[in-house]
Length: 371
Image (cartoon, rainbow, N blue to C red; front, side):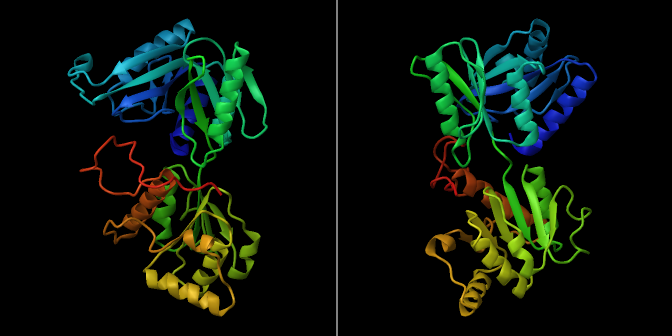
């Protein structure tokens, strides 16, 4: 799930708990074959049958709600296997060709493990929740040498689960997965990461749909521009705004997970912003416009004595975006964000039609290196 979905789910959960309602969380913990969503996808179910977010394209939700209502009443978590390859699953004739495992658990805000996990989701902090799918216990793991909350009854399984969670958290794009421990126990590792950052240099008209679409996809958006009239919350809702002239850019340091797009439509500002972006250490730097424009900017910087290492130049994406034939600003934004998703997850952004193999297991290059 992206940060936008998580915000929606948590907002509904907080409102329900404030009203005194009980709730359950359903989480996809295993996927075999083709399925609409992957491990770690969550859905909230309230005690009146209302649901927030989806686990599939509509195939599973009604059945999961029924299971969740039983879990809310009884209090015990339930793991259910759904085979979507049957010709007429529940009489619907879904025929997706795969199967999923869904774990449903009642929300207990007084339990320190789920409370800590929900706090990490709410605050956008890195954390991993290790849950054995057979047996008791669970443990919340923070990255590095951070604390652990909760425990698994078996010391050996606990140590293995904590180490596996920390290893998964160290990846650039950590994803949820169910792993098998040495003793054969399946352990689901649910992973939360801080939202990726998108930094847009330039607050022009075409930056607005890029910022809006990125925010909807869960990015933490930041916009940098020296023109207060353009840099307003009305134009960039949900974004952090930085009113900085080119000579003030040293005051702004993009975060480790930032992806930087230079689109000032102003040669002097673009030149300074490109130097700032390539010098930041961010793994992804895109420049809007034809390749020749970025090459001209680099030549001008070199003439000023500003040069870059091969590693820094390898981070440059120009022209930025997928080759979609985009023209309108909204289309260009889609092209840029499509490339960003493909780059982050290790895909080339090509057509799925004609691809041999499973849709979600089609990496074409090494996932973006951790910086």
